[in-house]
Length: 137
Ligand SMILES: CC(C)(COP(=O)(O)OP(=O)(O)OC[C@H]1O[C@@H](n2cnc3c(N)ncnc32)[C@H](O)[C@@H]1OP(=O)(O)O)[C@@H](O)C(=O)NCCC(=O)NCCS
Image (cartoon, rainbow, N blue to C red; front, side, top):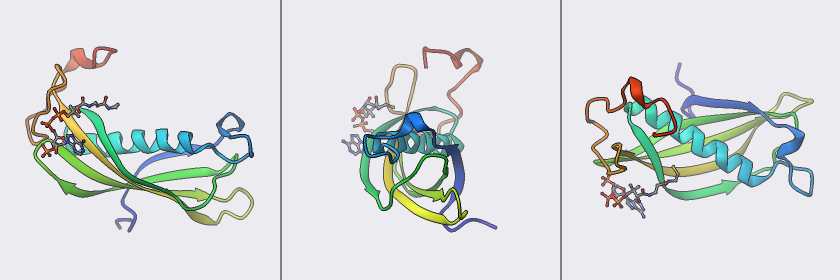
């Protein structure tokens, strides 16, 4: 059955290195994972190079603490010609209780580009090949 928050795209455990000066997980760490989660979901729409063009919204609803399992789920909000807009919802599993808590909600827009970084319709046939799996992406 499909989860109401969308496809599970990423699951991570937070570490002491992820914290800010107040001891909770740094928002920038969560944002980085959101970016990765958006990429993972975009890739399931088309096997292309995808770049983030805009983070339309990001809302930190509740803090994340060290040692928690954090789950990123994605849904497609809308599709354009070369872009897709995604919603990434983030939940943390509280360390001692196992309770799932909504912690962050975000809207991200991704664009599929060719090897020259020119936008291409994401409905194009797959544009990645065996030679693309390196730093030239
Ligand atoms: C993404 C990028 C290729 C778009 O280039 P561009 O010349 O604006 O391309 P276009 O005008 O053809 O727009 C392409 C798509 O992006 C959307 N877009 C472009 N700029 C946008 C903006 N500022 N806000 C929202 N959407 C935008 C357009 O609406 C279009 O979507 P559509 O084809 O679905 O209608 C270019 O801005 C870029 O390279 N940005 C840097 C990406 C990057 O490095 N990201 C961070 C790390 S992944």
